[in-house]
Image (cartoon, rainbow, N blue to C red; front, side, top):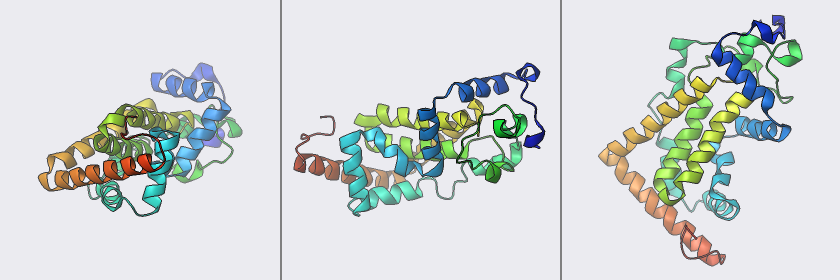
Length: 225
């Protein structure tokens, strides 16, 4: 078990183990706290900061007030029924970094966060990352609905995935797999004419509501502004 691991870096030879240790050990306390917030909340909650302090706040308020029903429906349904990362985990059953190398609090090599969550995931496969799948599903969907803000949204999705490595829950390849799975899912939805029409309706709704909110708050007449 993880408690039996010995904190001896000289015994680590696999490149994937070395990489996750390097990322995990280099993380600042602020990065760890941010990563834990991502771990404890859905991407739809934490990743709205990708829109910026003004637009992100307006978006969150509009969603909360029920002003974006089509957008909310798309975000709820885009991955529904398609399996996602969890469908692949039982096939690979690769052990998570902290299971393979142990937690520092138990004499292992992976620095663990005080708020934990490690015990509940110990029996779940590492590849691909389900959290990354969720983050990139949200981020990529939003990037296609708001293409003028796509770079920020996709950068935040990338951070959301990297945060899984920071906490020692996943390897980089797990995150890559979650991203590929998520972006293939969003592409599949856009390739479905019936679903694509719903995506376009959500785009129109989202842009119209956000522009109206921007104008009402004196932030400008376009999302780009």
